[in-house]
Length: 67
Image 1 (cartoon, rainbow, N blue to C red):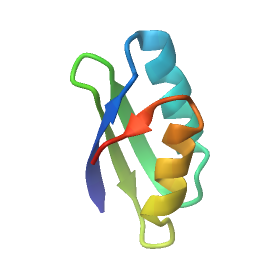
Image 2 (cartoon, rainbow, N blue to C red):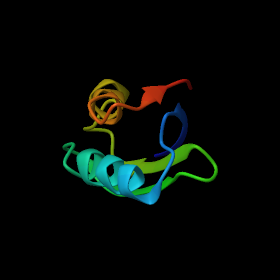
Image 3 (cartoon, rainbow, N blue to C red):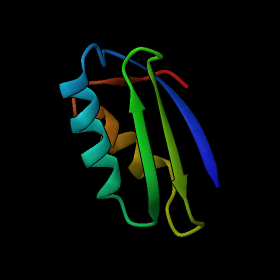
Image 4 (tube, rainbow, N blue to C red):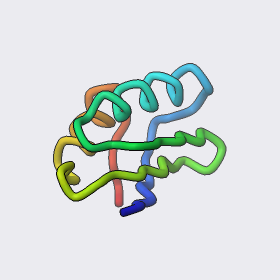
């Protein structure tokens, strides 16, 4: 599955890198690309990963998930 998650607070490449690393660590995530210019995170994951842990990983980096 692929999901596009819109976020607030990811203003630079350093923060985007932290978000990518945090989401990659979530079980079941196969690919992630965080784009600070578009304020979005694209996540590919299998059915074993739920959206909750992915959103928690993003929020743990100081970035707010808005959808």
